[in-house]
Amino acid sequence: MSGPVGTRKVLVTGGGTGIGRAVAERLLREGAQVVLTGRRAHVLEDVAREYPGRAFALPCDLSSPEAREGLLGRAATLLCGLDGWVHSAGQAVHQSPGHIDEAALRSQLEVNLVAPLRLGEQALEVLERGGAMVFVASTLAVRPIVTSAVYSAAKAGLLQVMRVLALAGAPRQVRANAVLPGVVDTEMVRAPRLEPGEAPLSATERAARVAAQLDGLRALHPLGRLGSPGDVAAAVHQLLGASWATGTELVLDGGLLLRE
Image (cartoon, rainbow, N blue to C red):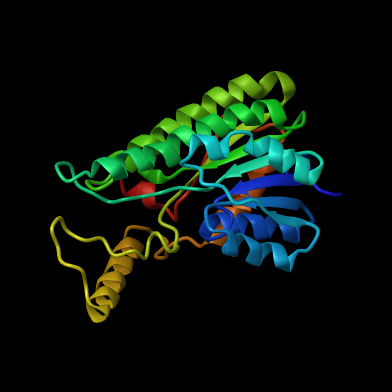
């Protein structure tokens, strides 16, 4: 199997859709073996069917401590080893202070912060020497907006988790890095953001709201467009194979942070 250590046998969380799927497909095109995990088995299996013998679906609800226990070990068993792990799974619920739902708060912290920490502890034990982990964070970790208190806090915490794992993995040359995308055109971004107490939208209202939302988000980026999942996948692939990079944050945002 060709490619640098970190890119050969890889687990991708959130691998069925969006950025995670793009990462998995990029790795597979480069000749890797990949285990895809997420909650929806059918979307994982869609990818696995396209790459028989090299892509494997391993459904898992990362919000459940019991379900994620031993996840990296199970992936390593499927691939007869594991040298890379990408944490792309995430959850964003936009709510302003004073309107933050308790369930949404707990769920976001569990998926965006607690799960990657616990999986990172597994990765330190399971990844082969010289292996790599990459976390998909967000520019919202350093540039919060009024509706992102929980998501931003979790992603900022994730960056500290990444740094600690980089230190802990260094004796075995196991690397940990993060990519911080700006706004990427995914299902999550296309979900309409409702005001507190706002009634459900009709199909026409929803389409208009999403179109205006996307226009506003594009305007935030000096390069004039949203990112694509493929843009992020290319950066993740680079970090997985970068043998002298650890504890780093790669900002990939179309110039978004230049607006600050």
